[in-house]
Image 1 (spheres, rainbow, N blue to C red):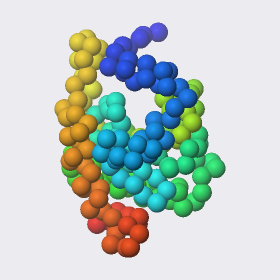
Image 2: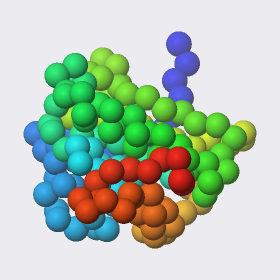
Image 3: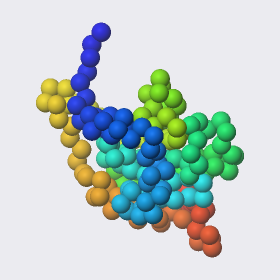
Length: 177
């Protein structure tokens, strides 16, 4: 068996085990400061947050407001909005970053690789040919071309433009983005 070293993930792993009983998504929502929490969009049932340990710039996560380990017990409105936010994320990231592809998905449960097992979420990662190279393995260095505050400042206004003009400001206009 070959082992591939990923030392840039060490702060994340240590943080997960240190705060095992604390949910990163619920903590972000409780902060009441979206910019500090890196929440770039709030819908009626779900929100979009930047991954604090991104694999690539623009690595987003879409999570429900409700603290649930899996989508089986989620209501239909929340699941539909999750897919709307997924489409919105693809549109905004494709427009801003012009990636050549995406990795998307959920890891449900610890054995599936979930770093947060009690609050399900959907990852959306823009990808480019050659964005995974020898540096993390040989040089023990991960290069991410922009920091989180810069990514937030770039993406937050783009997501806000995609709100409808309805009074509650919760409906999302995916097609216009």
